[in-house]
Image 1 (spheres, rainbow, N blue to C red):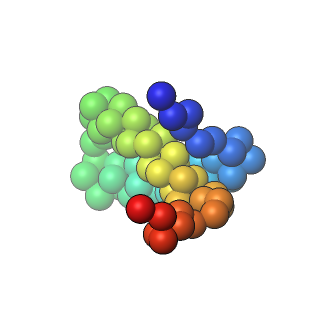
Image 2: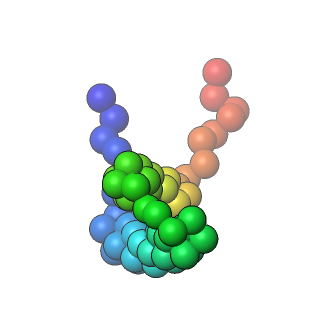
Image 3: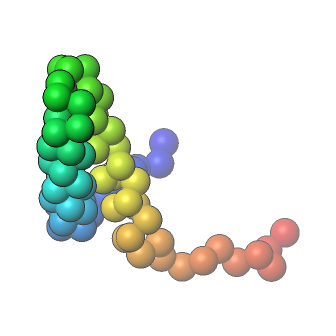
Length: 71
């Protein structure tokens, strides 16, 4: 089974950025609608972690490209 790639420094920086966006989203939602259900907070928090990991994967170097000349 392949090991999932993880670079802690990159993830932490991306996660802080995503948390800033999450806080802005929650404040804007509360300001516009006047209510902020717990399900929205929980769902946005779970999504923030997943988004941070995906962006982290996008930013880390992928290593050597595969050689297409092999059979």
